[in-house]
Length: 203
Ligand SMILES: [Zn+2]
Ligand SMILES: [Zn+2]
Image (cartoon, rainbow, N blue to C red; front, side):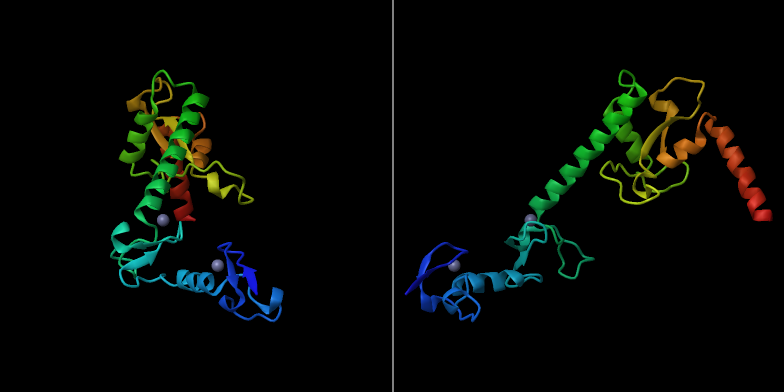
């Protein structure tokens, strides 16, 4: 008697399947070979014979397909090089898209290019100019009641509000900080913050 393996789609003799009382013909739907390959695929969470399973694409690849990572218990990163490159590309294109949108909203496309903003972003070590909080560029669905995920989204503000937008007259701050600064000059805003800190520390 034969049975079709629903994994490899091969017609195989019934003894090539493990017993399973609840299965069709009392057998597993996957053949022994497929089941053993599946069991093996669960392994390789740690390197075996120089091979490791990528935790993104789940393909078992040789160790040289991974970047080294001293801080990891396996000695390499958990994503293979191909997946890692895809991930970096994906987030880079999201960053570009986010900045493009900001430039459009402020109508400063003739003065500033996406690369100008990314340069400033890197110069600020990807942190908010005023608070040192890490900047984000999240624009997916709402995740929290207080919109925490967009609080530090990159926002472009002028250093001197009386001057035009230019490479030297802008800084990047979190969205929530931009709202606080409002129409104030950056220096005025900082002075007000100092007053608040002073009073808070004294009371
Ligand atoms: Zn099979
Ligand atoms: Zn991978």
